[in-house]
Length: 204
Image (cartoon, rainbow, N blue to C red; front, side, top):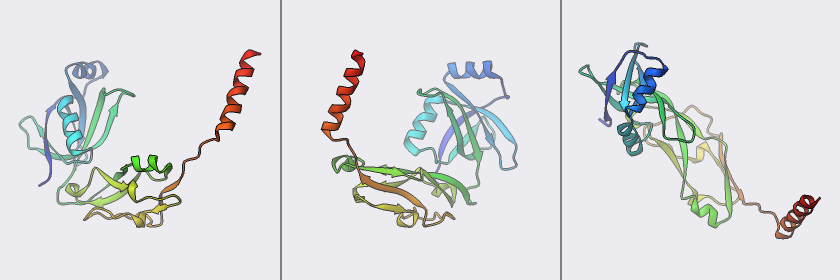
């Protein structure tokens, strides 16, 4: 089985002040929605959570060990992070059955982007993610698109992307994912004229 264990602490649902106290103690308050639709409040160690996400990705299956109760296999539904910081405010999980397929969104990730810079190309990404179906253990953290294979004028559609093994999608194969174009920069003389205009306006 492909999963990673994460120790959690069950707790009673609490208010803002109590949750802030947990955060100061290095914990992230959260919850897990069970298959029977009930919800269990919990908290996890922030450093351990970040370490596991960095290693296995946000689409990993977590074996939640809640006190002495029976472990729960779950995936991350949402992480609330304070903007422009690493301050984790809240995390929510949802329980999964390792033997039943789920539907979830998987992000596209462009790799080897430096080749685009050298070739003076830019990419317009029309779809940041795609909804796929598969067993929880087969859901990848992302679907990689290799920029080394892209050329000026290329249009990439979903049918051009090979999905990871054992994954399916009901999205139209003719859905455009990205387009490649030459990077446009203003001629030097035009930029010079614009700068001169700004300087003259500032003197008035």
